[in-house]
Amino acid sequence: GKPDNDNKGQEKIFIEENCDVKNFINYHINLIKAGNVCEGQLEFLGSKRSHHHATAVKLPTSKTWFTAASHLQKVLIEDASGVESIRYPISSSWLDVDKKFSETTCRKAISIALDSYEKNVPEQYSYVIHQKQLAASINILSQHALGPSHQSYIQQLEKDCEKIWKNGRQSCEALSLTGKQCIYPLHDSTDTKPEEDKDVKQRKSRQNKSIPQKRSHSSSYWYVSACNCGESMAKRADPFDIKIANYTFYQMLEKKCCSKLTHISFPVGTDNNYSEEHSIDEHDIEIEEISVTSTNKNNLDSPNGITDDVAVDGLDGINSFGQFSGFSSPAASVPASSLVSVKTEPDGHKKDKDLSSGLIMFTINTPNGYLPPFSSWSLCRLGDNNIYKASKGLLYPRFLPGSNYLCPWIISRNVLLADDPFDSTHEHFPTIAENRGKSTTKYRKENNVKTYIGTEYECPQGDRFFYAGSNKIIRSSNNLKEIAIKLTNSELPLYFPCPCGQRSGKTVFAQLMRVYVASPVDNDIRIVLRPFIQPGTDHRLVFYSGFGQGISLPPNGLWCLRLPFIYATENEIVYPPTDPKMPSKGRVMKGLFHIAATVPDLSPTGKG
Image 1 (cartoon, helix red, strand yellow):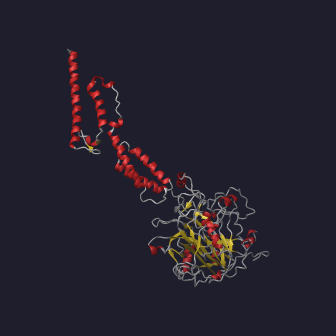
Image 2 (cartoon, one colour):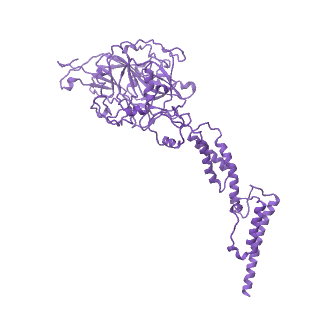
Image 3 (cartoon, one colour):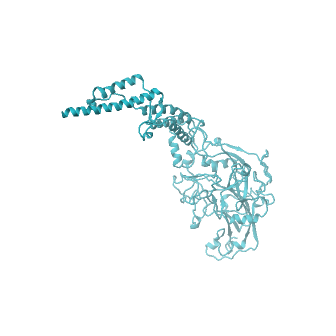
């Protein structure tokens, strides 16, 4: 009797379970018949937690329904006792409704996402734009489709978008030396510049597609710059090559302007490897000469060429560079305070051929013996110091009205013979007699010496002005003596907002490009230029001309020191500022202008 009772109990449980399944199926069939559930509609069923599990109900085909019903009949009705031994030949895709629905919706959504990726993008675009468009298209895909197939379709979308981008839509990602991107499609170029940082290297590694034709980079930006002496101007393309930026452009302008002036040579090396690998065809350099009128009113819109109103006298009798004491070579022994000393004699200077292969410009961290293959600086003599007329100012083009005046700098000989001859801006140079240990008599003159100095700023549009200190520019010829004191006793900004930006409402930064000095006629006083420039926020990155002790200007001359257009090392480019909300920290360190007294040798054998 006991086994029969057990069998009846199991049969009762089986019937109850089948009734539950029957009720469950009937419930869904009735919903479908009533039209309450359609394809793609989400229905929330079951218990109180059912809202956490949304189920998509999709009507099966008749074939699928009969096949599934046939297997269910075998499992649930015909052989209930052997449920565990029955295999289920039903395809998972027939019963996995969530995955089927996810596949269908993702397939439709990916086409919408791809259309969104290609919307509002230029013909060629960068990796940054590609990533931005890809993120937006993934977001659209996620809005239209979810489920188990979602992740695989995201991966497919990434591959499809990258295929579109690399199929002739990649732009060249080279940045100019001012930080602007090349506008051309991905291409090969012989333009050279300092070694890029990690971000640039990663961008280049992504550009693994076959490179199209060779062409020079272009950002479509143009600058208006003056020549080495400042008398002529020309339009220049935004540079991608450091040599073009700091040397070649000015050399090309010199052929028509400054070539006959006396120049001071800066220390450079001779690296044949650099010359061959970085050779530049001047026909490929885009320069457009500008015709402007050189008047004290500085009419910027005049179509006339530069007028030659200034007579430059005394050039025929000027001694060559090698005859100026202290120029052919800075002192080999330099005090610790003088930072770096570089010898410049081409014959006596020994260096390894590969030492300077990566050097571009001198910094205070440049080891002794390293020389750049070209100079980023220029120093030329415009004529005798009397060619500058204080009543008219400097008659060069594109100076803003009233801003073309040099500042008179009054030098007292008594100051030069002060107890501390090595003051921050005054020096006492010993003579040969003093070096021999022979006594000398102080050389005193009670009168003052008048010279002129000025720091010229030039904006990308070619506007120029002299700086007045205290965040102001020179507006007239008034109170210029006080300005000279400010210039000689304070550091100077490397970049300064140009007044031309006030017309457009945008901040335009002008850059310190030239320093003018009218050296005294008397030979007992020398003006020494010591330009040490920190172009960015890094206090350890300071550039200088290569003359560690400064440049002692010969007497009776109007001199123009042209500073670099771009500041860069072999590992880093310092881009000029563009954001007015982030003022530049670039500066010219205090002590640009020094005074040196030359004491005559009064010994019997000395030559005064």
